[in-house]
Amino acid sequence: MESMYRYDWLRREMALVPRRTFFVFERRSLSDLKEAEAQYGQLPPDYTDFVREFGRANLFRSTRNPWHNLMVLAPPHITSRTLGEPGTAGEVVEMQVGFYINTGPAYFEWAGGSLLHDGAVMVGHAGQRRKAGASFGDWLKRSFAACKKIYTKVEWEQITKPAPPFTEGEQRILEAMSQFVVRKAGVTPEGNVLVEIENRSPVELPQLTIGVRGRGGVLGSIALPTAGIWPGTTKTIESSVYKGIGRFEPDEIELYRLPPPDPEDRPYFWEFRSS
Image (tube, rainbow, N blue to C red):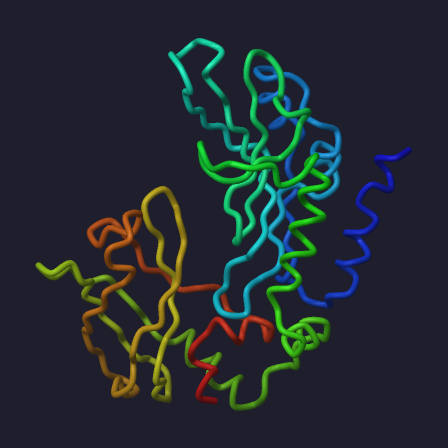
């Protein structure tokens, strides 16, 4: 019976936020967990209960970028580190089950056929790791409360209200955004990306937000300067596009059009900042 009510507190918190993307859940098959359990033994029930009901979770979308500050991974991401010789008791498996922006990856430690520390959740790297929760549920509740404090009182008041619908001016911007065509045209010797931008809309936009896909499918977004690209014209610009960040090598990245934003996505699209 306990498992039925274990996450009532989370359901109550979710009900306070009338937004589609602030808390995002992706259903996962329990068969994904069974693969991990077949190798490492039974996972803690508070973690499997969470996955059964919510799946993978992205919680607390930032007001400054489109990403989330707290995540629950399902299935766990498995890595290992060796404190002694490989294959000995010194080999420890890290089963990452979450991430909180202020403490980093959160994981169970496993060695010698069982979870270490009575299933406590650890954070930090080897030599500096510490216990962040006596259990997965404890870690999640503590991290949730800490994450909530990231937002100012004014920001939280806005988050707990539905986003106002687009104005007529914003609707025109939205329509124009869909009529810009962006193509990666090459890479400069300095490692900047050449981007060809064609404006097929009836208006000029000062900036255009596009998606960036890097190595391994990692995603990002950037705002391209489009001032001076008048309706019916095409211009090639040079952009650094995550220059110096390893998984966004300029020769490998792809540029793509983002899905049309909802009103609650305003903070993440530069087009609306001048409307």
